Length: 228
Ligand SMILES: [Zn+2]
Image (tube, rainbow, N blue to C red; front, top):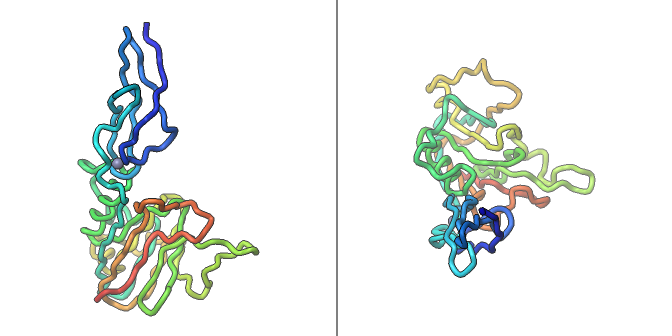
């Protein structure tokens, strides 16, 4: 007879979603792990191994400190197109990458998009682009004040990234057009923002250890600054 048994999980440094225990199958006195466990950081997906009555993740997490993903975006035109999606002009192939649900998979997607000229990153329920200095910006979801208004000054607000697709995409407007982007297809979810022409560094914090995308405090998904 096959029965199920719940055993504690030893995460070995991985960050596992859900409870710290898992169900294993019990058959003829032997235990078989069968519930898949996925690390939210490195993307390792395994049913684990049973050692001394606990289910162990087999190898230590290689990304225990999380991931800060830094990319650069050339903006020679001085115009950036800010959107919740710039597909199909910019898209990536996820074959061979870690699961997108993991921080590693998201970092790989951000790098793949940057390589073809699009700054991209997850923002959960949407975010806004704010100017924080002459050539510096944040992609953030500001805390609301006692009147329900964002605490970041409205005068620094440049663009809204809508929430439908849980990500931002930013590209040089002329680069986007040169890849077949058609301005006639832009709508209220897309914004063109004037910036100083140059090279911009995006420092994405979504994969960092302890990052809380849904915090009630101001959440900064990415810092953006001109570096050349
Ligand atoms: Zn891990």
